[in-house]
Length: 306
Image (cartoon, rainbow, N blue to C red; front, top):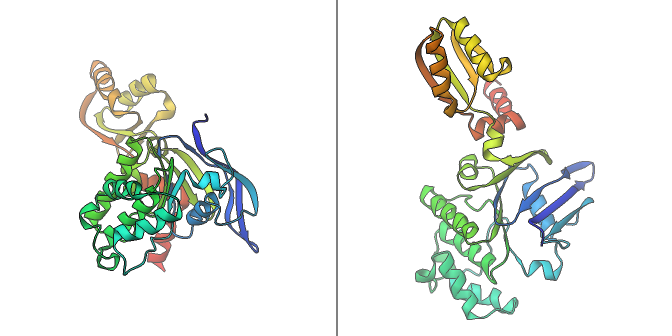
């Protein structure tokens, strides 16, 4: 059994001359939370719809659980919440799930299990139209969980939620992954992705720009050291780290190094007669990495200046 739950190869969707998704190659591993990260209109939802068989690709291929997207045997093992939940407003949460369960050949046990997973059992008798936005999102996830799917696809699951609702959804997604399910979620909220995802794929303009762990996407952290004399300290650091990882900025030493290298660096500098006045650890945020890849930061600056 393969460890890759989702695999695409040059997956492309064109609308006339415009490529909504352009030759995307992504892989989602078993049991991980994979964050599909990108600005609005980047091609996230179109990609997810192709993985569900709702949209036919123009070219390229995709395998979901080792099978073609949209095939009945594939969909039995996939749960999805794409572009918001849609339920009958006059039915209760439990009754809405019963409708879906009957359609999928599932019984009452599946309904109650899904309600319990999203912690809606106490409000299951209330009509859907009385639910808060967070409860509606959770019921949508409950619908996706019917039948205990191996893969859960969530499109912007925290969209429109308040901070408490976002935290609840984050805890739910993490619990699902800890329970052995694979979660593929799209988002434009960098903080959410950073907190819950094992790996991320960054997409912009339909092009997958990067695919890695959050730590790899951030890159190597930086140490800033205020030292004297600067030239001697730079020489010591170059011997320990290599010249390519040493630079100076505004009279301080900038080192491309992880925090655990600090004690050895300070010790070597003191032994070389260098006075070490300050040491600061800087780590590139996911936001900075995202802007560097997509150019979103430059676009915002231009909008402000216009």
